[in-house]
Image 1: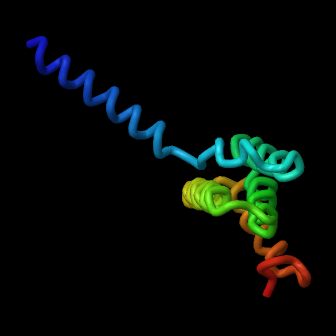
Image 2: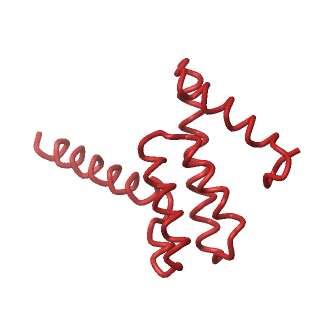
Length: 118
């Protein structure tokens, strides 16, 4: 009786550890970045955590046009991927703030002179 319970507890702990390790961007990637770049990264993370999709996306994209390391590029790309997945999931559930963010991002991406504009 105790053995199945112990196995279940160990599996749950391992699953939690696995989720924590692969759950998001490498926040330590910007530890040695310049103060200006670190500020943009921290602003992006804060906006991301608050589900401010537009501000997070804009800050992440702006980092990609900066001289950052390969590890930092990977962290930004991971963060953008996670942000977009969350935004798409919210959109699929009918979240009006996600729809508004998608509309704003489309508008920003079509603005001439902006990186990625068409």
